[in-house]
Amino acid sequence: MKLEVLPSSEVGMVLAAAVDIFVVAYLIYRVLLLIRGTRAQQILVGLGLIVGGFFAANLFGLRTLSWILDNFISSFLLIVIVVFQHDIRRGLSRVGRRQFFGSAGYGQGAYLVDELTRAAEAMAQDRTGAIILVEREADLSELAETGIRVDGRISTGLLMQVFTPPGPLHDGALIIQQGRISAAAVFLPLTQNPRLDPTLGTRHRAAVGATEELDAIAIVVSEERGQISIAEGGTLTRDLDSAMLRKVLQRYFGARPTRATLSGTRPRRDTQKWSS
Image (cartoon, rainbow, N blue to C red; front, side):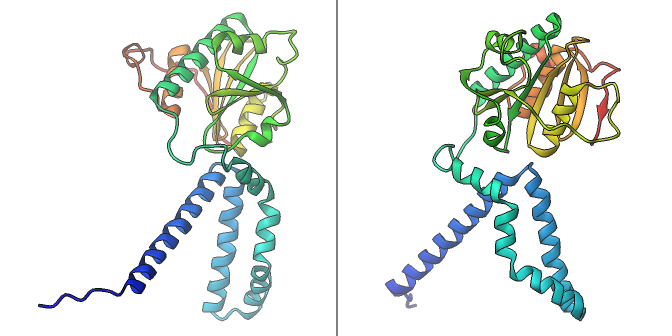
């Protein structure tokens, strides 16, 4: 039996095609990660439905609708650049700044959970109001630029010091990016959800509003009640004790639960969730 060997030119073409497919797939993957959890994700879904409607209109012979969508799609590239200009700028700014592979390991995640839990518990006992926004997949650099830039290692003492009045940074939110404090005194967008409890204050509404638009976790400490709350995806969970807060943060940041946490208290019955 005679084995046929591909010419070197054809082998090169196959390798080039494989590399081409890999690079394109990786770029699509990075773009999807970039817009994950942001408002751009919803806009992209809408554009996808318009493209699907165009093919459906051609399939069923809807000429007028097909003509309208055809003119819309002819300017598709320009529309994408205009609509996603902020996300494109954020993505370009992240090139070379953030690691493309890997994420925070167990050690960093456990340290982050410990410090945030201790700080929230201490501020709740002292009735110190606070709102901490922790970055996940969505890049918060553009939001951080609206506040006062800080580049500090996370610690319980520093977090408490930032929110202790009458300091210059206590009024506003603190942002954590890549395991470090990146900005303070940041004002977040307030939610417009009419179904929220009308007794909620500005901090809680800002936490819900920020997590509605961004893939981030917001920790809120009430100044009036000394109550700890957490917001994610526009959903606010209130009245958490330190054990429950630790469990929630461990779930989000991948830290391994300790033996004490596993045997911790159950959720309080008065925990409330307000869905966006």
